Image (cartoon, rainbow, N blue to C red; front, side, top):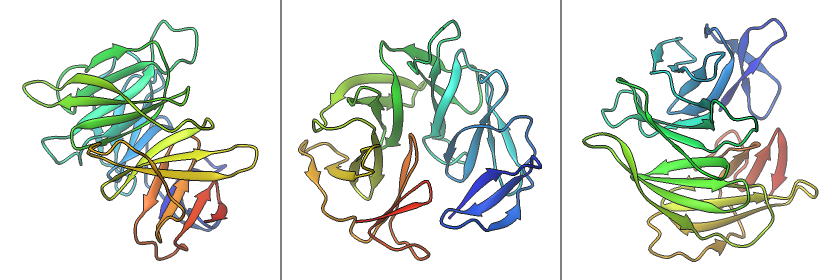
Length: 248
């Protein structure tokens, strides 16, 4: 697994997630380095206004320009690969007139067409994932919500309901592994990481504390976490956070 890092020369280079070796220089040529998300191998880049998103293949620089949005995007995900007719951009960000850093805007946008519909909320989003027509979102005050997304005739948000989560420390993030929704919490002082699991179909709403990662590798950053099901270069049952290994 490789990540992109900005070199002092201004070039973008691929680097191993677990060591400091630069493997190659990316041919990526973009006007800004404002990356607000990664989905299905594409970087989601926004312009200097943080409103104009583009999908960029970091290996070929193939770029798909999307409509300019009515808010400043801070993080975004895709619902499917760009080649799929079901691909939509989900973006979260700030009101254009906002004087605070409250990430309270959410929009759904087709790859072709006009600007997506924007909804504003009285709270701030931290991170989100998409699965089976549902958006699972984590809020800054350690609460969660589920939003249904309908594709036709026009993409729109429908039912919104709370996602019950265990009462615990802050810095919560959501990710998925197989058929489970994983809730990852991290104590910034002790570095302790806990993971709870709940079925993605939400038929059983009880969270179960995991005592191991089951051979998986967990990669954790400030507002995003990913699970690798069959790690080969990394040790299973290990959480990696900013190059720091935490054995489970």
